[in-house]
Image 1 (tube, one colour):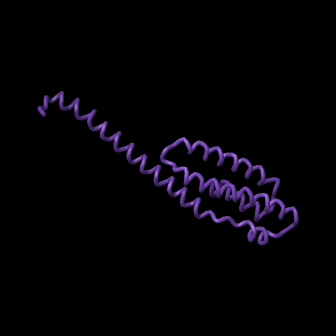
Image 2 (image 1 turned 30 degrees about the vertical axis):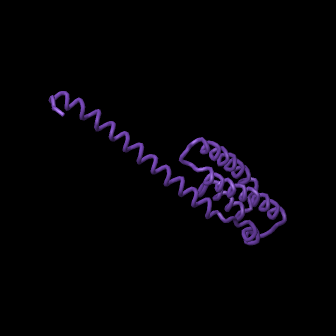
Image 3 (image 1 turned 90 degrees about the vertical axis):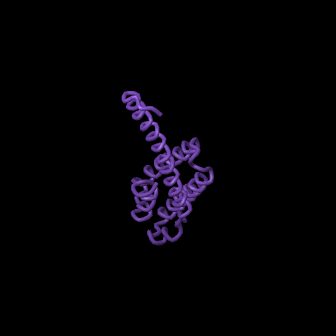
Amino acid sequence: MGYGGFIHNFKNLVLRKDVDRYLPLLNQNLQDIKSTLERLKQFNQYTPESINIISKTVNAYEQKLNVVLVMVSQGKTSEQIDAVVKVNDLPALKALAQFDSELKSSLISATSTINQGTQVSVFLPLAQRKKIRW
């Protein structure tokens, strides 16, 4: 969503006002983001609240995209456009940080489970070979 993605292309549209170049990219970015958010709903570690916050921010940007298009067609400057289309994306950034934290916790838990299983599977054959008594 960030650099190189939707927000990057959105800012470039505001600055460069090149609708032919950026509108197709933005439409594809929006489609990809919405599809990803739908897929994330299938996973328990992503709370519906976090997904909803990100969805609301994406929807706000999508609405502002229409404003950008109108203002570009009216010949407004980048500064004028930017002043009107600012979106508070802090809540979405916090939700994305929460996703990152939840994913790291899941990976740590899974790694711990795998490591425990590996230790047992390595230790038991060694113990049987050396006839270690419990």
